[in-house]
Length: 254
Image (cartoon, rainbow, N blue to C red; front, side, top):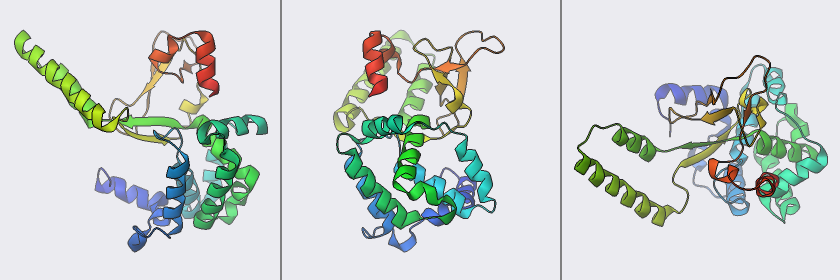
């Protein structure tokens, strides 16, 4: 599903020719379907990282005329030491992460092997790729409901009408949450080169958001930032930032 013909064409030109299963879309034995099913079985939503984001990275290199350009671009994202990578993968996959990681690597290789990226398909290279996405991946949440609510908030209404509308919206959220739990948004993850350069702070001077309700990320200053001053964002939401330093550190460490 694409938002426009232009978006569909851009995807086809960059990566989708590799990832499109065509008539095998519903075939459980298709390599990409097997990979996605394995991912769903080991990773609980929302998408703090996505196996298909990694697949898109490989597909982009596969389709690219200038493969080295994309490899250089992906190499700009920070890498971790081996022990840090294990911690990140453990956080994403849980206590059985080594066995699960090997299963994912085998299926990933079966579906997408690319000679120009052969290092990514080795056990160490796949762990590094997984950690790269886990470290740099930015969660993307879009919600048509929240857009509608914001539009309702902007309406000029009589006090009685405002009260009735607010009560309706409150009940609507309760009814939806009863069916979906905490997953109200369309969740995904993406890699953003400039945003990944921002360090974490529990007292950030900037924040990331998706005000256009699509994939376009905005980094907005929360205060005046002097030339040469580091731009920091919070990897925690506002509720988590109110907790103790020990609790915040525990959340960040996983």
